[in-house]
Amino acid sequence: MKYLGVDFGLRKIGIASGDDETNLAFPIGNIDGGAEAIVTIIEAAKSEGAEELIVGLPIPDAHQTESQLELTKQFARDLQTASGMTVHVVD
Image (cartoon, rainbow, N blue to C red; front, top):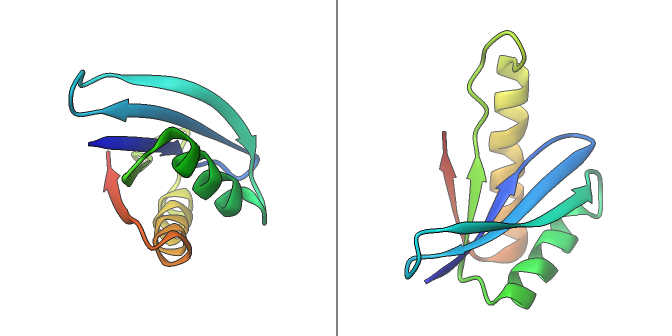
């Protein structure tokens, strides 16, 4: 199975492509955050042949806050609703 990995940020969002066969992920690049980000991610998933999406959760520490964690969880829910794809969230 192929996956599209998403590293959510308010200004920039990193995306990567990976699969079960190799157990590796390769960076695709960064996209701008904001209103069009979900559409761009869905297009990238289709282009890469991804069947599911994986969104990385930030671990709250000195650089990440609880509010960033909640924003990321909401983004993952919005992404699942808009794409109709399974979205996994992982640390």
